[in-house]
Length: 82
Image (cartoon, rainbow, N blue to C red):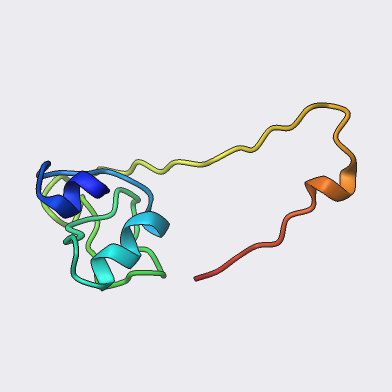
């Protein structure tokens, strides 16, 4: 992201929660999301399929792993929405 903002690279692919704040403040321009449908977090950004690559749909997910002996309370997470 730092290199995109500085103009050192022309294209960056990353997760929406990292890119969206920078796009909203005008530091980068979001041109498409890779999912099959527009994101409810950024409905103004078209999908890659809408942008001319029919059928394009790539979504990712993140997993978090901890040692087996980690106490359950330490693994409790709350969903955060921007």
